[in-house]
Length: 282
Image 1 (cartoon, rainbow, N blue to C red):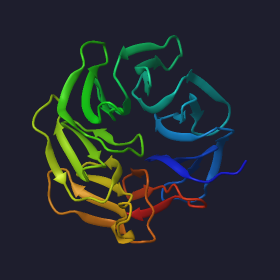
Image 2: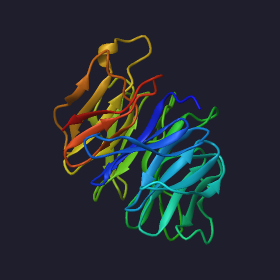
Image 3: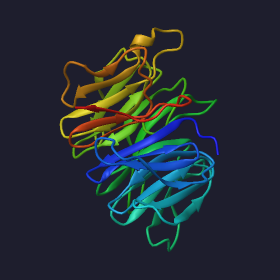
């Protein structure tokens, strides 16, 4: 099978894991000893992980569980799925029909909320957070949350225009705030998890695509504007509390798409034929 673009990426102390169009890969922390864990995907896209497994979106097809040490795969759900998140007990995913959850024991799939055009998702102890991308009639992107136990959809931030969209990793959450990027506006945003006035952490960014968090910073990939300078592309670091934007990597040879971090490194992928995973020290 011919494989081109490298898509989603996640990392923890056990290693770094990423998807190519047709397969799922891992490497040791820092990127050493890459190996293929699973293959025969139509379009392996975003992914999430827990201590034992990866949960991989085969885009618009299905959601698949892959053991971190390889071996057999397990289909958890079949639908037009775009994003996935996990907690200790359950797997959460979005599709064109809304927001869903399935226990890891695969006992059932249940609907948590009917949300129009849900996309990126993240979870904490009590809520699932969702970023929507609007539709042809309404180009508004919304940031909302839904109780894990079920209940009303709560708005975190007012709708904002979404002129286009690239990837299902535009949202993250920590103990206090929700963070997201707005590609069409060129901004990195945060807001209190319970709702409140959004804060612009960085602006005038060249098409921010995805983000990842550590304890102090937000890491953002920049696709570069259509018709703009290739020097705008790269990976940046922004303090969670606000401050100067720092370059992790920047320049015409940097093609960044998804991003992940561990204790010492920043990793990013590129949707470019023949591209791989790039790693940099923080």
